[in-house]
Image (cartoon, rainbow, N blue to C red; front, side, top):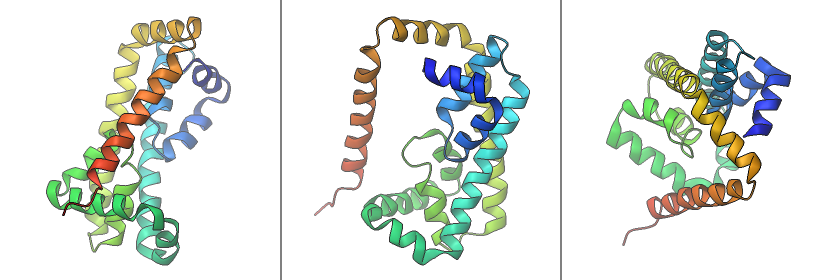
Length: 187
């Protein structure tokens, strides 16, 4: 986490933009904390993360809609996860566009799944922009107002670096188990 803080302080808004194209959870949280300590501007950080996050999903939607064969070749190993994304779309309807912004692991699959369907682009565009705005505000403001707490966590991890791999393995394992269970064939 501390490396992310120093990288964002060094590369600033360009790094935030690039990282937010593909998700941006850590980047917007780090930008919020850096805003808390006065190294970045909160409003600018939220705006950049918002634009990049919305643009990233537009690009995924576009690629899935107009470059299907290329996308499907790249997703051969992830067909079950893509099928899960379709099921989630049917189950949650348009709400999935907002939900996917907050759930790591499906953030890239949902816009691709939506792009592969006949979902109306204008409706997707409006919901995507609104969802990206909510996402950027929630994580940007949340990390700003939790800045002191998050700085304490980063300090603890820097003093006891063995904690970070354990947390990452637990979170990664939980995500892997969930995705394995959710995409498992049911006889």
